[in-house]
Image (tube, rainbow, N blue to C red; front, side):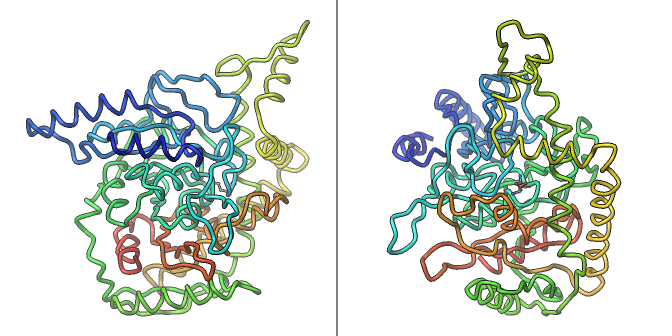
Length: 452
Ligand code: GLN
């Protein structure tokens, strides 16, 4: 813990943490030492972790990367962070993120952008760590923490993991409780671990999963010991290559990496088959209707009365106070999502957009169901490129396109993981993306191990 706290001090320029919690860490580390000495230690005793600042932490400020929650101190602990701390983990601090987890680059945080610890060969330009779990990605990659929690709504664990050369898994929707996680799009949000290795992810995931009566979408299914099931052996498994993911104009480096990944999985004993997911091209448009729709509803609660910021202009009535608080408290990307969301849910447009998007979502889930008749897992790239420079995707639509490979599995609620798979010609990390059948995290992790 002491070494990590020192590393955090020397890496403040990365801006990975919104809040460092050294006193809490020291107390928890001391408690872990005692537990280790007297034989009562949990499975994660003394492991230094960072917690994405979307997880409510009891008595510790939780901002969701937004000004509107500045100074909000939850009176309760999220189920997932509570499980990690209960297993003996040490919390080093709250990690930076895109505001309300909306973004793919960590440029939308009200607490400033997070830098990737990586730089391209022959360039001194700062690079984005990916998003929205960019603080988690940067802190793990720079070895400030041994692991971190992330959340993934449309790729926010997997894409930042790929950008900084670490592993991250989004489990099956419902495996990890959402209770106490600030809501973005409730039917998509899913917590998961980010760590340097597949094995570390498996260890953290075992502790993070489990039924929670406080989350109505929590799955009441047994949780295997994921680390104990790691063999890297893929004999008898068929790996599907979805033909629709071969995008026109795909970056050649990414295409080569994908081929290389398939040959590694073959070496581990898998058979490669081509499959079709015909509705893939509708996934992004459907996601960027459904996610903002749910977000606009979830974010209605930030009214200046119940949480954090309140702005009361002179002579303001209640409605003026709501408007002034929300105008000052939310950043531009969040406002954009609220406007899109309320529009697609409005009486006149509900059927044309929201209902249509829900139908597309069902078709995308059915595509995957049909593919599972021919294969046991899918391999794709995680993102269409390596990490980019700040400001490179100033057009929101261009930013949204970065999620093209991660969004379909989110809409279908499937487990999916990114593992580091090599470097671009510029020397930047690239990730490969494994999608599994519902609840088949063990196969996903095994394929990750075979690639890592
Ligand atoms: N980039 C996507 C978005 O902005 C995904 C974010 C996430 O998974 N939290 O919505």
